[in-house]
Image (cartoon, rainbow over all chains, first blue to last red):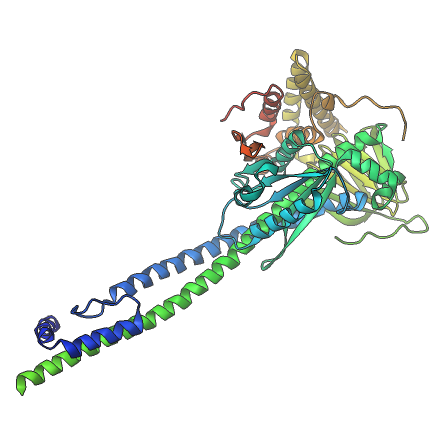
Length: 324
Length: 145
Length: 90
């Protein structure tokens, strides 16, 4: 209350002797913030800085919470991913991996996330898919996209609209299970013609490291051709087919099953990578928010102290003017 | 992926088995004496030194023999690969220990699908009903034997 | 391998892929489990996603796959697809 009275006294003094006070007023804002308080206003407004501090603190709280949520979700998905890693290994042991197979119809299945705020993993997947698309297109060859996840769709719509065959979203509403992916794989197989399917996803190496990976699945006809011509798949001929059906029948079942297993593992790995990337993105976000908060606190204190000093000077000069 | 062992010169004494399901690896690199898989042509026994084979599985019982222990699983469908180096990979979509199956539900399902098979009109319905009958009869046989 | 072409299995002749066949088998087996195994297996059967086909750079109407109990409704979906009908959302 007393301060307020003195302040009002000071204002009258201020109007009579504007120069020292104005000089004070002009100096402090230049030091602290770009918003210059209008000349003649009382104390430098700390309200603006205080508002910023409040919002930055809120952001820090939110990003910390998001990091915790991602960490807890990650633990659950990581277990399932590790369990599913054994699923594709038998297929690779049997059929080998032929990434540089040259075929007419390529379909690139890009697995991305639906939600954002997960760092750069979606951009890396899209970059790899685009590079693959360039590699596999040309005269007599064509390549199409099947996109899982909103983020990939948004990025690929911009320049490759014509090559998109199918998009899938809302995949992560329930925890990913094999049945869901199998139904999806079934849908893809029924609607998209392909000679080779290339699944692009981010493999989960550790909480901070995700490697973009590509798996190739050949259609049964191409597989037969490759096995006859020798090479890695050449060993296929040495296997006896038990079941009395033809080799192509078994191969067809096998490639369909392989696709769904590989897609399942890829979707899980990508989900893990997404959660890990979100954890680290939110972590660095919280840290940045913390740094910003420190800087703002310093500014706030400086501003506050400057305004107190200004007040004191005015009061003292006012008092000395009254005396003498 | 761990590299696979090369084909040995002589027949090994044990078979290395990998039995994987989408949600877990049931058996991982375990050495056993024999496995019997439910191939589409019937129960197929796999011993160490078996010729390299690819076989599709039909709904049935998979048994793993190790010494005197026999572990039985009911497998819904999948594939089994036997490699020349006496490694057997079995990939199944769903596999349950036989004691987790409920006999009353099996009987009910069998009756339902047999009825459906009779009343089916389109090819698709007939196929679905046939699958139902096959699976439930296999479940029945697994519970009995 | 024998040169005689065996007849395709009945399910492939009816338009199912191997994945469809194996999923139906698995769902039927899961249905015949005792409790509590049955309820843990139920979490392995939930399906939910939405697919949109593209033609000429334009997105067509998305189709939502939403299945709780896979056993019966998978077959419904298959038959709906065969007849090109819209899926029954539920």
